Length: 111
Image (cartoon, rainbow, N blue to C red; front, side, top):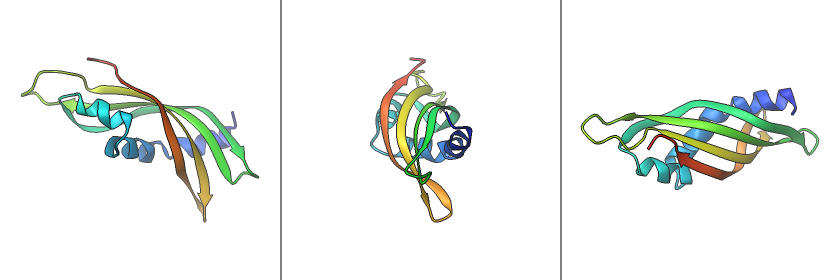
């Protein structure tokens, strides 16, 4: 794994988690099964990151821990979701952005 590529992807994990939470993703479907709100990235680990195409792109894989706050007026049905995501980040002008991603897995872990 390239350390520089890893650092770049680590800086993009909050945005990636937000996209997963707010889109029609598997993560979003798992959130819908809980009685929790306020989901956000709790932690993330880049497990693979390599520059490709003359360092203009980075292929990556990351494991995300996404958590929310239990609604105390409803029965507990989970607040933590683990997701594995692969993707591609590209340099756009002077910044890196994730342009493509795929959820390999997403699962509520504390039901």
